Length: 475
Ligand code: NAD
Image 1 (cartoon, rainbow, N blue to C red):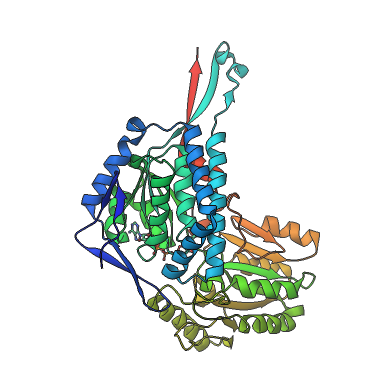
Image 2: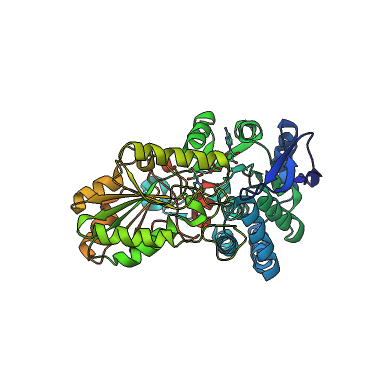
């Protein structure tokens, strides 16, 4: 199969070797992309490094590029084409893939706003005697070339969460998309470069493996900042490998949700069933740990099991499908291994745990789990909900916080005092009250504590990370 070339410094580039892209659901060959190495990377970084002097882009043009991209991505036919690409390369059910495209439109729009609002502040220099007679203010200056590295689970919107703020901030970018889902990213880059008047020096895509071109991108001297979304192991490794660079990390999680007897627990069961299994649990804020108060544990769990059992498993292209294949068979075998380990330790499989006729792992609910089992302790990244029962709120909060991750947590309660305690005591980057922790709007500051990362994304916040504050003093 012919390689689909990648845009590097205004040219369509192929490499001596390619990487196959296959549909996770049925193994169908979808394309081949270049396996870029240092040769392609050098060209990409050199192009990006001269972008700001050779093709300067004032804020109004950056905002117009982003608005134009949003407009084009909103066109029904294009929206559907992107959704189908996401669906095929990641096995994300088509309805969820369509929602991802709609979110990408919104991310682009918020980035256009951030470009227009990029500003500094006036400094009250005469507030100290030494500053009298001087005028001071700050500018936000682009950090320089950004290296953006993205994961497979949101092949479009998480790429937009890197590229759009970088454009808004005025940073030329070299993008390294996930090796299993590069096609949505390439289509987006083509849209920006060919139809939105983004100059060729501002965006370069190097497809390939993390170990090769990913590592080389992180190590490159001309790359001022690495913005990474992916697993904690890789992310913190990048932080350690580039101690002098700005490194923004959006990493994994094992999101807990508490269900209180005073909350709308039937509604909670329905939402948790969907939120734990959307994209087969492969979202960093998928519900994983379900913490339920003993007073309602029995009827809540029965309802949850019923709702999970009712989820439609199948071909991601079928609009009725709610859960489809994991990204590859290794991921599926790993998740099944963790379920087996939990069972061996005394957990009960209430539903799922097995494969359907197409070898898709069925959505699974586990009860009688122990917090030290991998299904509770680590990030499952699969369609598995682990139910734990607590007797009082203190214990519930302690269980929720008993994790090395800290991205999002949720609680269902009708009691204002409990909600207020949750906002303070749940130690996570985001706390959702009366909703699943899987909910996110693209403009909110999004990011985690501890192993889950060190930054906040959402265009306005990412732009801050991609700019330096420069103090200016006029005497
Ligand atoms: P991954 O860490 O395996 O890969 C992510 C990217 O890093 C890929 O492009 C990969 O090629 C690249 N990479 C791998 N090794 C590298 C290295 N040594 N140097 C540079 N780049 C390297 O993650 P994944 O399996 O694609 O994605 C799943 C993970 O991403 C989960 O842990 C999930 O929670 C996390 N995630 C987090 C967020 C968030 O916003 N916090 C969002 C989505 C996914």
